[in-house]
Length: 92
Image (cartoon, rainbow, N blue to C red; front, top):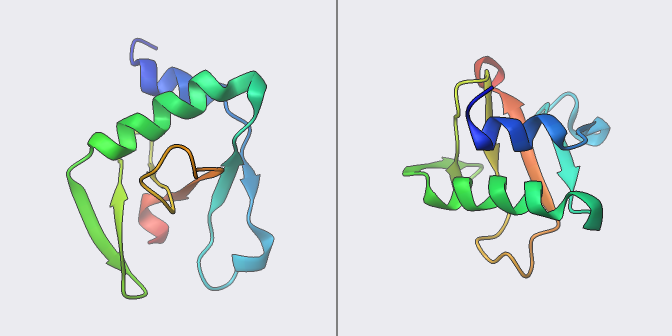
């Protein structure tokens, strides 16, 4: 793997969001000290993406790095970011 963002994604721990299983199936990763560098790399890549779309009336910036997922955050402020979400592109 030569893409640093895809490498960071592969090192992060992903958890299925059970409470949204029926309405908006997705996974999330929590910010952890041990993987903060990888979290920040993915966060920064999302913030640099030009893909902005609405979901339930809210505008989000999405990153689609070609791994079959799209990634988004709930905030554009790294100081407030505790989660990064991802969903399979075909499930959106």
